[in-house]
Length: 250
Image (cartoon, rainbow, N blue to C red; front, side):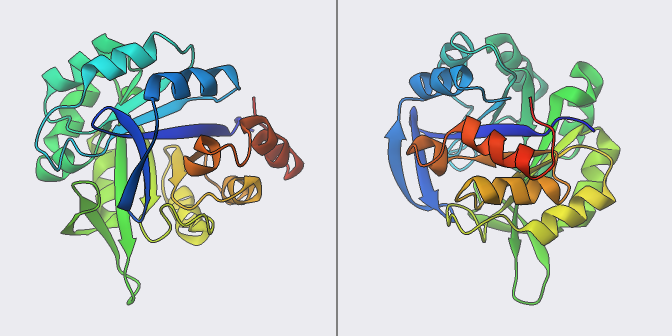
């Protein structure tokens, strides 16, 4: 069995770590560099950095923050937000990122996935998906930080992204984001069954049990933000719960 991963997520806006509920009511939390260093020291398996305003404000992400974070950690580091070109990807990797997350720009131009995978390898290109489960059951792909609806259906878009070369998927369910009510385990499980790339569950972590539950359901990794940022649970407490549920963690 492959080890499951516990991944703190840093949503960045204007150089600060922020958190909201369903992408609204966003409030500042802390400095990204100090938080990243703390999580690395506490045993996080990876770190995710999203510049959540970059696509909405139509700019590239803050590379100085990427380089400052990379200098403080010794674990894999994925970055996303405002990445639109091969040059943007190269700049992020040069600044210290290990993986590149594409979202809105890939929706507008899916070839971004294939050219990134061809240049840097599929293991480096992560398709991040913000999805909204509608009342009729349709799972709609959203873009620009969840602010803009698309016509894309989630399973179809994931299929296309993998065919183009994405080596991993982050599935962020907006309905659950920031609620601390638990992940959408059913949707995440279905993704894990259908696709042969790692699925990272995102949206809804409220305690260690939630993270264990989604990992047992088939997710390869689980993201959390608020519960770590506000010291509601430690990374090691989450890992202990995941082990108790029967999964291997580092």
